[in-house]
Length: 145
Image (cartoon, rainbow, N blue to C red; front, side, top):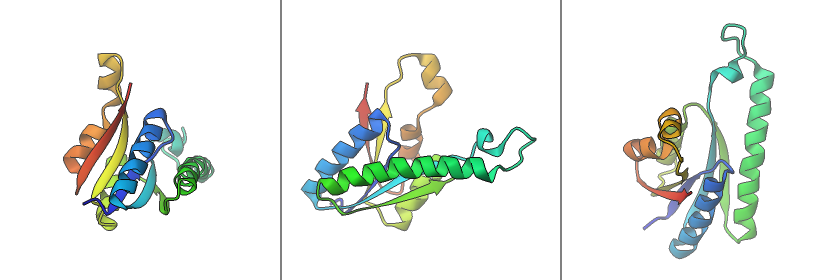
């Protein structure tokens, strides 16, 4: 069944819902859990000086994401799960799918929040939708409103 579950975790409300769903599924299937959070490489990390790389800003962002990941790991461990965690850097869907393949994940769990307006849906896009198209395994989308 699902022996290795990868949870793409960002600490948001939808991420918290995915974490809870992931725990229930892991208990049922007696699965190994791996959490990842992805730091996207975007222009505000690059600085305003014509694309100049700012290592200090990048390290601050990575440390903040490590705190989010550590909080998720602590919640899983306090519930009795053995879980590993990794902060990845790059394009979100690419990094999640690549890591899922590396650990031979049977399932990827990701949170998704329904956006209220068509403009918000168009502007932000849907990571979960793109992830389903590119994942090397099944994907469970935990939905919040």
